[in-house]
Image (tube, rainbow, N blue to C red; front, top):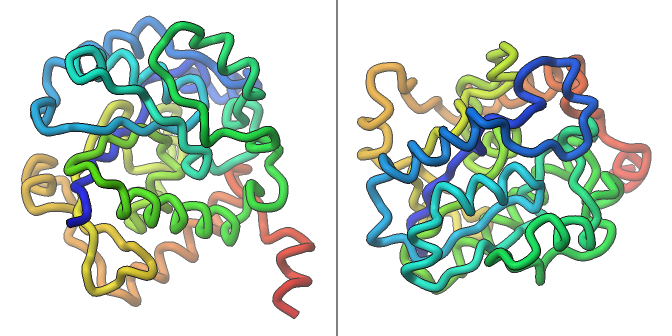
Length: 257
């Protein structure tokens, strides 16, 4: 049986404080972000059943996973598995990860598994390009990987932009403030998903009813197929204009001809 996936957006990083901070390379969490992690650890209701923790290899997501799920890691002897396919979508300095050796130095002695992170994962070229087509392909690859995991419940800590691709839910993606730049996900917000058995090739995820109730009345009604496609297309154009995503690369366009 495919696992339940609890998706989490990382805690506040220094790049979240102001748009000018987007120039900071691979920023760490702020003190307030660390406090958000402690609060998430206290309030997250699925600690007993989580048996796998996955994070984007970017420093703020790894740090969020280590802090917010410290008790699970220690009690169950888990490691945070770094999955490069769920890195953030743009090529801004704040959304570009560090080289593998630097990540290893930053989290030396901590329970972090970097086996899947290879040199070039942070190149923002080819497979890793900040284009809609490449990001969508990475998100699908990540979903398939998650769907095939043997664990029953998995925590995935990633980014506001990549969460829209991963979940294929684009509601809130037009929101733009300093704290929510083009995403409907707040820092340390979590939502729970199952896999749709009707679409195994795409490994589509469906938010659980419990998760939607937890989000309260502000949780928007799921969109129909056409509405969802229209919102996704509008978001792609908006993110391109805001610098959070690029148009398809010349190589991608050439491949389609």
